[in-house]
Length: 212
Image 1: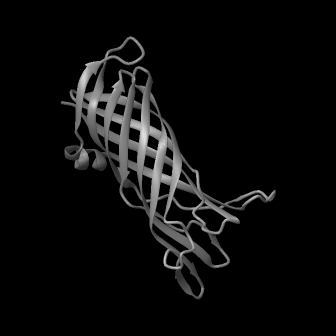
Image 2 (image 1 turned 90 degrees about the horizontal axis):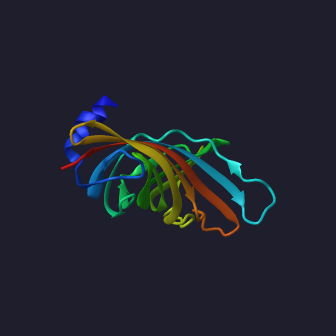
Image 3 (image 1 turned 60 degrees about the vertical axis):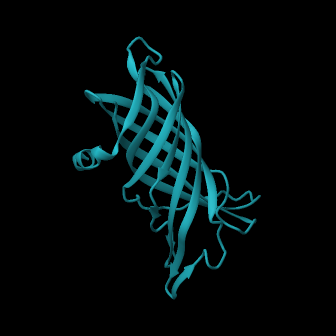
């Protein structure tokens, strides 16, 4: 974590005005901000049959390798900010493993998120993300299948985003944001209308803000 802090600090910038969020303590209020964010994500893929009373199956998966997200945002009102987050390509390795089969995905996302400061430096995030698959490979004992070339999966989908976090002042002009986000897929990746394949995720994020 210390390595992330010092290596990527030069890439994190934020333009701010002064204001006050809910609560008595004055805080710096972002007018326009740029930032870099590190996250580690656990995916929880689910599979089900459309319209079936049979419960969907939750498929075990691994934790993603940490990725770097970049974003830009504006302040709408004193307590409210809108920001656009562009994630680096994320890997979903071994989304399921059964009968000597497993699935790997690469994708990136663009998220439009509303950040509402509810009390001093405590905030809620909610919005939507747009996912684009760059690779979808299924493996078994006989070899690999490129599901995108086979046109078996949709290349795009979208997810709802909900989160909660806190902005912690460190030293002059530098703050640390810590938050948790939950991503819920709104549309299936399967092209087959009789099947649902969804990737829901939990992400733990850390970001540095430099105000000037």
